[in-house]
Amino acid sequence: MQLNQMNKETPTILVLLGITGDLTAKKVVPALFSLYQKKVLSDKFRIVGFGRKPFDNESIKPFIAELVKARAKNPDPKAIEEFTNLFHYQQGLFEEARSYQALKNTLEKIQEPWKEKTNRLFYLAVPPDLYQMIFENLKSSGLSDTPDNSNVETRILVEKPFGVNSETAERLEQLLSSLFAENKIYRIDHYLAKEMVQNILTFRFSNDIFEKTWNREFIEKIEIRLWETLGVEKRGAFYDPIGALRDVGQNHLLQMLALITMDYPLDLSPAAIHVRRAQTLHALKPQTIEEIKENTYRAQYQGYGQIEGVKKGSSTETYFKIKTTLSGERWQGLPVIFESGKRMKEQRKEVVVTYRHSENCFCPSGGIHYKNRIIFSLEPVEGITIEFWSKKPGLDLVKESRTIDFVLRNNTERTQYVEEYEKLLLDCILGDQTLFVSTAEVKAMWAFIDPIVSAWEKNLVKLESYQPDTTPSDTNRVF
Ligand code: BG6
Image (cartoon, rainbow, N blue to C red; front, side, top):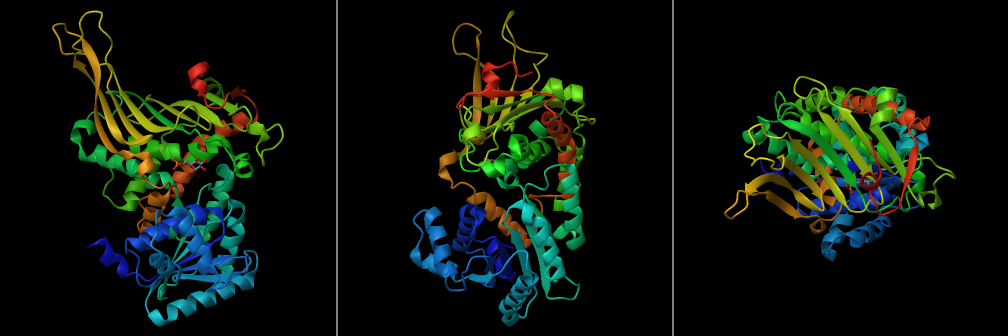
């Protein structure tokens, strides 16, 4: 079935809790507008904003129009107007029971003329400290109910962070699972929806020439890197309590590892893929204190302490590098290196798979050692590079490094986040959880990260300092 036909059949109401926030402005509204322009939304698709600010069904429209104009490239004014007509607004307080009753009435009113089973999607575009209160109110108002014979199908979308450690994540998960079945919970990690990240599985499982060597016998190490030139900027209050490891390590980097190392799923269903991703994440052994001291490095860029919202004398890391080894039959003992930082010398996001030196290397005596690398690059270009050695043209047998490159596009050719969020929103509308994170994965990721965070909090690994626009591992002995 064509995508257009499929979506046309799905009446859907998306409730945006926190419609006036940053997340809505930068990611959700631009992505919805893009979906609207691609005509993949149902004719019966509506968006209900829920928030404290004094908007109504009319005044929310120019507000949304401004958000679209601020982000979309040359948007058609008519399309903007039509798009804003999809919006309704329900003023209310997140802590107030009767606001949820009012929201319920609004949803019923919108849905009533359709006389069809309707998806209700609740998107929590709010700070995570409000999650618990909202979950509880969704439950007590009956908004989270989906009785078997009702004409409502309810799903919930939540953004990371899912807790700040194993314990808080577990509490949140318990609460969530008391309200919604696992197949109704859509936990967002936008890295899973990136083109090149999705491509990892296609590359691996559709090309036997690589998959047959995808194990510790042939591969020497895996490096996963997320370097950003930008600093923490205006996000001090959000960033300072969590730091780099919890901001991107506990989720984006570990998810990329899961895709690079998981086994072939039993089938292509979301559940089967979740099982495989979770299995690899579970195979990451939590490190002992001694290992953490030896294999982890953390640093903060100079000037971070002056950012608004950052605690005086903060010891939050803005850079980390961590080495670990994998377990399990396929990967036993394989080193994996995670590295990420803000205010790095360059923008570089990639997964590098390095092969072992070939035993039968066609090397002249004393020749250089020979390793192949496969690089999955997200930035600065999106693509895949295979590095290999070739004979340099000429009379002598001299080897030189060459590459085979697949360039999907230069990263400046896309609008940041729109592509990821449109994919995620569409998949949630369609009920496809493949690109969302399961509860088992959340648990496994925290089990690996927790001991490191706790050792760092106890200062068992010294917090180093680095100059902005440099990469600490270039100048310091990291481990
Ligand atoms: C977010 C983090 O999850 O990912 C940010 O909170 C980080 O700090 C961002 O900058 C990186 O995502 P992307 O898509 O820009 O690589």
